[in-house]
Amino acid sequence: MMTNLFSTFDPSTNIFNLSLNWTSTFIGLLLIPSLFWLTPSRINIMWNKMNLTLHNEFKTLLGPKSFNGTTFIFISIFIMMMFNNFLGLFPYIFTSTSHLVLTFTIALPLWLSFMMFGWFNHTNHMFTHLVPQGTPPALMSFMVLIETISNIIRPGTLAVRLAANMIAGHLLLTLLGNTGPSMTMNLISMLIIGQMLLLILESAVAMIQAYVFSILSTLYSSEVY
Image (cartoon, rainbow, N blue to C red; front, side, top):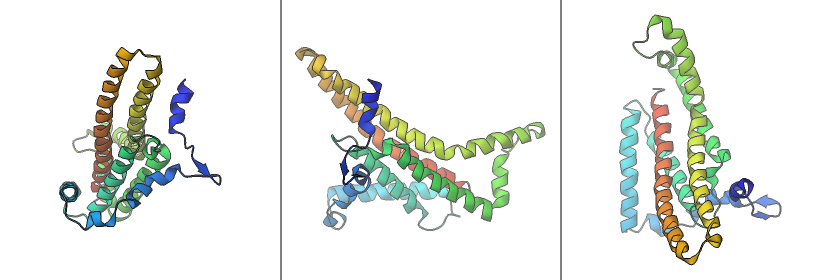
């Protein structure tokens, strides 16, 4: 039973022995009409307002020492993650963000670039992060070990958090959907209502997890200046 549940996350569309499921990661953005970005509309205004809000928030977290345009990197990550999370809620669309292959591929290069930039350009500043202020001298060596381990596992926690939340919601929807044929007509209406409520919850989770991924990446970046 568990194998059948998790098989819903396996790539299954193959043409000429090439898996096309991963194209859902970016092909949806290509289908947006070009006039959407140029023609004023309510959706366009809301979209621009959301981007401006994210820009101001990320700029505050990064501080005045950050490079111009850095916030657009994290806004792009947020948009990509949110778009793929929402796409995965539609039937027969592959959820790429539920796989560590995608989430870890994004989290690891980000973390490596932050670490390389910080240690090469701000070495003393990076050393100060290993020993929190006010640490007793007897615990300094122990705190260096703890801070080093917590720093190393950051890309893994970023990747696993997003993938696990996407998998959990889809598994609940799959479990509820599989119980439908064995239910009576009186219970099917309750099942449909439950699935609709769960789908609304998963829509909120899709946006929240994209925001968490981008905001944590911003916080990790702010520590290297």
